[in-house]
Structures are given as C-alpha cells and as structure tokens.
Length: 139
Length: 168
View (cartoon, each protein chain N blue to C red):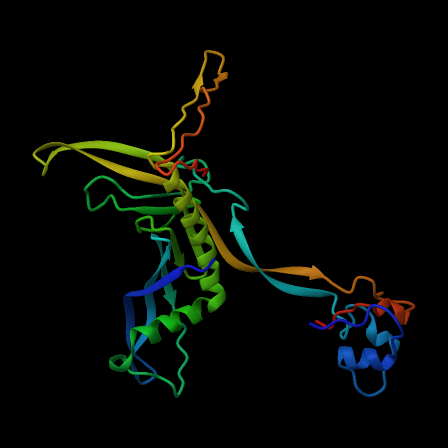
C-alpha cells in the first residue's frame, strides 16, 4: 500500500555564523501529510542537523524548500525513516477508513447491556438489509 | 555479509578468502572470536514501546504516558505529549511526532474531559473540552546476535565446522 505524501516546511532555525559561514541551518521543523482514499493524517518532525563544513555549502537565499526537506530526510535516516512513518500512518488511515464504513446509514449500532452480575445480554441479531441496489453489503 | 557453502569440500584457501587472510595461515587463526571469525554481529532494529498495543497512564505515580490537547483557553494550559512523566513537547496531537530519532505515535482516544471555568472573557462560565490519547513510540537501536556458534573457540577445528560460516 502506497500513500500519497505531501511534504511541508514549517520552520528552520539558523546559526548566524559558524566557521566563517553565515546563516547555517541547524534545525528544521517539517511535516508529511499522508493520504489514502481521501483520508489524511500528518506526521510532524523536528530535525537537528549536524554542522559539517564542506564545499557544497549553500547560502540561505539560494536554499529551496526541497533541499531543506531532503536534508531533513537524510538526517532522519533516509527512505527507511519515511517508510517507517508511512507504515504506521497507513495502519491508522486504514483503520479510519474501515470505521467510516461503520458510520454509514446501512450499518447498525448494537449496544451490549450488563445485568447485575455483569453478564452480557446479547442483542437481537438482525438480518442484514439490502441497499438501494438490492445488494447486501458486508463490512 | 557472506556465508560459506553449507556442504561439500571446504579448503583452507576458502577460509582465507572468506575471512580475509593473507600469508601463512594457521587453523588457530580461525577460532571463533579469534580476530578473523566474528563471534557476534550487530543488527539494526526498531524498538517499539510498548512492544505491542499502546500506553495510557495519567497518574503521577505510574508511567505517566499520554498525549492531550489542552482544553482550557489559558496560555499556560498547552497541549502536552508526556512520556514517563517527562514533558516531551507542547504539541497538539498529530498522528505522529518525531523529535531526533524517537517518533511518538498517537493512539486511541481514551478520555474527553470537559472543564468549566470562569467567570471570564466568555461573559460567564465557559466550558471547554480536552482530548486525551494513548501513545506509543519507536526508535532505532541495535541488537547483538551470536553467530558462527558451530566453530570452536579453542582446541581442534574441523573444516566441516565452517559450513555456513559468516564473515561479518
């Protein structure tokens, strides 16, 4: 199962100067919105970057949102980190999707009652009713 | 990681090639844990706490793990993610929150607390709701596995004891 993902950048914090380099990004607050069949949830991540001077330093004004998020993903462990989040978020989205079917007009809420001795009185089972097309749906 | 064949003839040359030995070789160099033949392997794992299910404890004497929204319209009553009695962050419950290498996942809704406060800005007594969720977390770690357990650490060695031996 592959979820649709939208990456968002919320905040960065920079150190004004380190080793002669200006505005060094050291903290990134970002999020991923996961979507499955219209259901969404979000992961919020705060990433600390280790400063490592190299010839590939990019000045703040030239940085793009994509570059910053790529740094954050790499710092968090790369694709395995994204896969880890996607798995857990996907499980919750599947759960929400399944629950949404139970709140449809065709489903019936059954309540259990306890007697004085905490014994459950089973509700009367009803035959599933056909929908407008004449089909009997199962959840 | 590579492993030696699991059947058939194994030669000293196979051992030297597999475990990276050059020059003259003595069988004693190939004792398990003797420098060439590793006795353990470190494996990356993901730890989940709790191992299954989720945690919810709002008592101050227990594990104290929960994620709540903070209901009262008061700047001091912020949303809280708490784990083992430690405030991890004042962050409203998203589905997950990662700080460093630890990711906290919001579990099921356990309580809705209604609080009444006032008189105040809502011109009388106001009611607000806070939502309290269970939580679990994951983080990367390592595990040490025992390997090459069929290879002796001293004494006599037979080449057949190196079937399936791993070099890392």
